[in-house]
Amino acid sequence: MRHVPPKRLRMASLARLLPLLPLAASACTGHAEQSLASTREPFIALERNFQGYQHWAGVELANRPEPGGTHVAGETHEYINHAPAAGAKAFPVGTILVKTVESQKKSDIFAMVKRGNGFNASGASGWEWLGLRARADGSVAIVWRGVNPPDGESYGGDPRGGCNGCHGAAAKNDYVHAYSLSRR
Picture 1 (tube, rainbow, N blue to C red):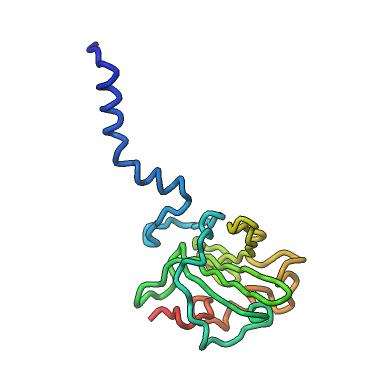
Picture 2 (cartoon, rainbow, N blue to C red; picture 1 turned 120 degrees about the vertical axis):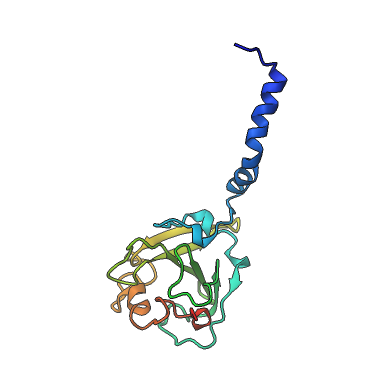
């Protein structure tokens, strides 16, 4: 067996690790960019996926029908992590839409995530709904998630069927009401 001096061993190990450093650095920050085309199903959004949503592309809401009182009870803004490709028939798995509603009484943050893999098959197929809350440090926490909100949360017990009720058949744009995101 050949003796390898320690310095040489360290340099050889470092040379093998160098290609992985950018990946490791982006994973540590929680802001790793991932192509939606490479997102595997199912895509399960974690809190880190929502951080900094205020810096994503804004969505034009001007020409959409108003689906209900919860989303329009104040100043509304909507953001998307990645716009759909031109000509797409549906939003790709990994798409995240965040909607904020600010009023004098409260502040709400909602999200819809294209999870894929047959999730929510009897509602807005492929989509998961989330309620988010801003923390004092500016980060975002997941309060609830699923095919509908739980009782006691916004939309919980909604007789129209919660998120699926409004985003179901009425939204002809892959269950998304923002027509500025139409997949053309």
